[in-house]
View 1 (tube, rainbow, N blue to C red):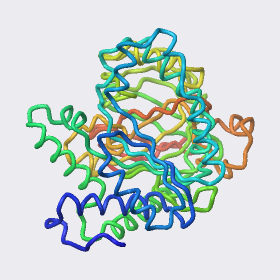
View 2: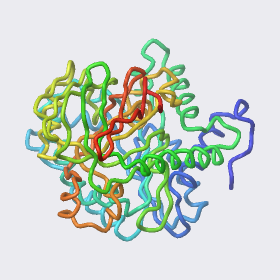
View 3: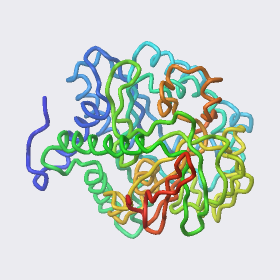
View 4: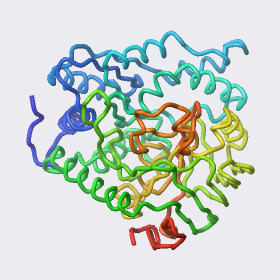
Length: 418
């Protein structure tokens, strides 16, 4: 059943949720008939999770398995668990997810956790717990970063997230404002969200094609707190919008998405970069990030808030100090123009150009999904237990594309495509 064709302004909350669920399954995930779906969601996003489950079965899903998380239960661990608990993860669960992906299951995540959940907890325990999860999830993550399966992420508003974004509003009003922002930036408030997404997807592919034709060897960034040169991986390929996964399904991994992105060379980053937005990482807030790279590796890292968490993050493994993704986003993106800071990477990374520490996407190399780990590394792809995006773009950022002969060409000026 297709959601009702009510005019956007006249839709009820339930109708908007149905539209979002339909877009998530039929456009974002590209679920095929007979395919299993593994979904993760918080208990606060159950109304959306149930609608997505309904749309999945209507699309022919053979089985939908939803794994629920609960913020309050997570906090109880930090309050009462023995110290050794923080070096453990549910390996059996993550191994099960990897096995599900290997036999063809799709992956959908509903983002919407409390950005500040663990901000007052012991950074050492937070870092150890995150590392344990990263190690346990690695087999499943590799299937995702290699785009072996169709996957997508959508957002669901929660009271805790809304309270962080709109601290001066009554809880009900804050939650309503957050839902309104999600519907707007996810193109749900258009007359035909499916058509709107298909048109947007085509535009991102056109931008990627232009960059692939240029074949820049490096990018030069200049802006407030930024003087940075980033080499691109050998045989890199720019992507944007949807992609055909290894299982043959076409999916748009992030909804919303405004980026075109590729793989940088892990050994060719030099200079200073300053974050333009705060980073909410697994329930902890990191603000005022500034790092200095030498020959691809972070040699200095500072934050005005969350310094210890940042240090634990980049000490996860050697690859955590190197870059695995570079993405370009115009300042005119709907998310940037909303004027909101979402404190959620799914949204904030699509408001600004960004870079990601950690694991590379092999799909951003020509024939990369067919290369061995050694061949990927030889082309400059990074390997790590983590993949963490953080935002560096603004209305004052200039980027040049550097050709193979060393010529600099204007690529972005004042945050917009040149």
